[in-house]
Image (cartoon, rainbow, N blue to C red; front, side, top):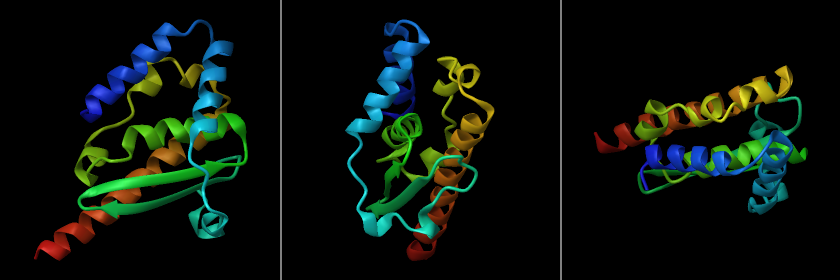
Length: 144
């Protein structure tokens, strides 16, 4: 599945849901399905800066694809990071850098998040793109 197909699928899933209370329940369920992050990764250097809640984000490179793992101490925030992990994980650094999570706007999420949560979501995306830049650089250096 391409990254654009992932975007389209997320938008379709949210269109099937009713009102925002139902959508929040779905987001929380996504967070509950997220694989637990080992406590050894819940350290200061893995915290996403700019989030009101604690969000830990770790990565690994699997061939040329980035695998994201994350956790949070807040249910909705954990669901939001789960959406981003599901969206970006398994993609190449180039795909991550070239693709913004447009589904956030398309499903109207920005209007339904508090300003602090909205800033936190933007910080999560920014951190994922920073990891993608670092891996892109690492990959290009290893090719040379």
